[in-house]
Length: 137
Ligand SMILES: [Zn+2]
Image (tube, rainbow, N blue to C red; front, side, top):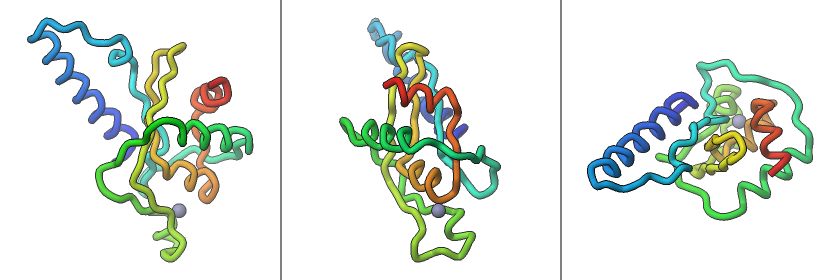
């Protein structure tokens, strides 16, 4: 799945929760109304932003990733860029993802554990908004 598909899936499940809540007279929590932004669900057919990120950012992101729970993704994801390069032996793999909530900007960020591999091995650079959010979290 790419970023867009992750967001669509999220929005679909929120819609069904909203519908259920409405039918049953529940108030849905404010947090469910936040915008979902998926980051780092990369695939070989799409361009992605490249650049350097600070080591502080990486460390901070890892700390946040390890705090609390992670969710299992649908199936096991293997790095398509490694496989494409013939680097099958050392390809990145993961089957977990994480959600972090930016209450200030009302955003729910979703990202796969693969983001660490993409950043360190393939120079993926997440959006500045996300980097700033992580640094002030
Ligand atoms: Zn890779």
